Image (cartoon, rainbow, N blue to C red; front, side):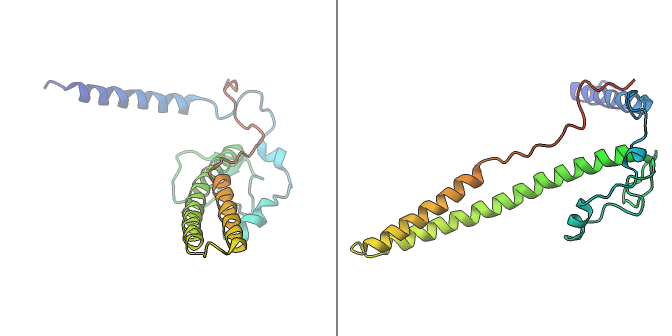
Length: 173
């Protein structure tokens, strides 16, 4: 049977992916410079973010959150290998960043749509004002300017700075 170029490419990619997965499983789980376990480092620390998340119905911790090296927690996803405290912390950080990104896009789209409607409504009100009422026109234009400023600020990206947790130069020994 003769394979088409697309089929050859697909099989090649499958072989590459299988080789990458095998290589990833063969790697040690942490870099050589990490001597003490992450769970020992965490110790009996309190995590203030637990209360903040709990206030909105988000529960990620559990009784031994990051305090034992091998983490046991309920999940819909089954894992072949146990998860260490550091792996779980990095995973939770990534999930929170993804959630923050998705939620910020959703909230931003909502607010931009609503501010657009508010600007249109303000323009319509302004157009229907009597031309002789200078004070009302000034107030209307000031409101339109305020709404456009909000719109401009919502269109600007926000930047949040976090300490680095993973770097390219970090090499697994």
